[in-house]
Image 1 (cartoon, one colour):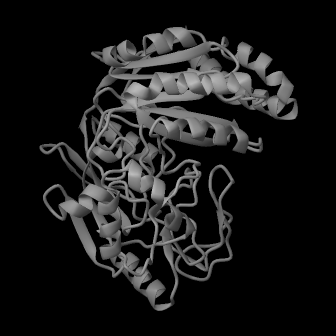
Image 2 (cartoon, helix red, strand yellow):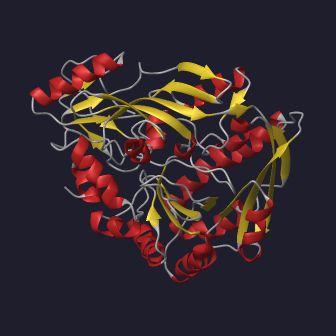
Length: 443
């Protein structure tokens, strides 16, 4: 989201804002390169002018990863599918392609990503660079599905990276925070399109936490939402199905996805912001409003859903075995506090992966995401939650609110030094630096 006036590489009079509205930037100028060559030229010009450079996607991150007072790179024209290799099971796509466009284009080709997050407004480069993920027993984050990427470094060099070519860059740049260079294209692993059957149903907090390991083991994709101030949860199990498609009826889709999850939810949160004391009572009603349903469709229509109610979010990955005690501590903290929480807490899982700064690097992980309605004071809740998460060796999502710094990350990530050494080599003058990266990566 931004209030810019014009594109190209001229002087900017725009103020850029992220989706949540909590981060702003006023760059000297913006560049919207239409080719890798134009991008390299924009980087060289910025360096000559003594300006920092940051690429920006759709602004769905809650952190200041993309903030710059120098040159803001927009990847809008570096978009679309470059090639499909059906024999290899890969698709190469421009970095500025929104996930929703990629998903639709792949579906037309009879293909799909194996797993994805629940929002598809992000650009592919923004999503992978911050570690966007869904939930899965065996299938991991979007970045873990990358087979290759094209990266333009600070001196304008174009690197092609994969497990075989520039492997040390590939190991880090899949989740690179925009610190190593500008991604211009990504090659994803894809597979023939398939059907998922989603089973959504309410379950008590005690039941879902008591059976958590079994629910994860028995389902390809399991997640649940706990409603603070209640003992109620709603669960979602997604498993492969032979089909055919049996999407929710128009009435069911409208009631569940639009009315209860967006329209009515907006009203409920607005009421809660105006009258916080009403939130526990509202939560008890809201947590029982979503009914059980089962439907079958192609992956992106099951994994993703619209999110039009704006919020602030913090999410931490903890070792999977620590999920239940961590969540129980979070519930106890909320119950004994004077906090009033109108948003449910989201829980997902991921297998271990081999990406240097992945929140699931080297360990099977579970994610706990806490939210607050935009415009509502969130600091007290997030501070208390973060204290619990870090006590359980939590790693914060790179695109969501947190207060951790390089000292913390150097202990949380065994390969943190590997990443920062590579950054020193690829961007010794910190062309892609900003205050946020200085805090989380050091300098």
